[in-house]
Image (cartoon, rainbow, N blue to C red; front, side):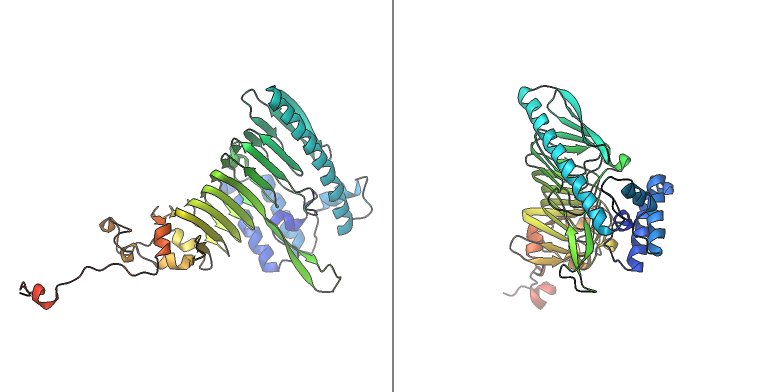
Length: 384
């Protein structure tokens, strides 16, 4: 879809100067070549930042693309919306054809390769392999596809900005969904796409959602509404392994293994493993009965936002702030039988300590203290 400068920076339209500047700094650190990023992407991010500083919503290159399109009748937002609607409809029909093609090959246990998609936005290559896996090469941009087997993806996944009708939805009834070298190739899932592996695992890179501001539908001047394109990734019987989860994302799995979590992320799992140092901004972990959480970064305590929440199945809510300050030595002995292995100031967060559902359920309870025999036993006398 046609991407504006707000999209490039991953922020909502109408963001403040500070929000624009903060988004640029965050992405610049991520994509700068000195940090192993892609120079081309960094240049794009920097240009979007410079454009927004002077109030330019669309890059000049995209305005030219719109003008050269057969549906162009100006460069207004309504024209862009109409163009995206048409392109989304075309891609959605193509993906439905791709689904039928891959399903027929699966039923006959045949192999084949075919191109699908839009010449305007780029085509993607689908290949049904001899082992039953479906290989997808290229960026998946709109429409739905259901496949009864594993999917191997080489490309990013996004969803149309202007409509929910053609929202990207990839569903596997069996098998794993995997990106090929997602960190090295910078593959990502974003903008409200939905990935479901009903009976398998999901291994991906960065996952982003999107919030943006729209004008009031009743036309009231100065009144806006916030709309969100929440990205959903679900492996209800398996694992989700990802890197950075940012801005309006939901994850649902038995086990979730991630690096960092930022800005309105909802995680529902029985086991959650964090290997980075950030869990911030209105994010929530819904921990399933009998589950556990582990923070492996030694200094992850510094990156935990006080307003982040852990919610249990009985609806009890624990602030991350409470875990940041709760020391292991203050837990009941039955929860930590080997307390002597921990320093007195070691908290529940960091160093891979296993925080169990039971600990969280009884977090407010004071540790069990050993009974003392009073003054008589203190001096070696018996009460008798």
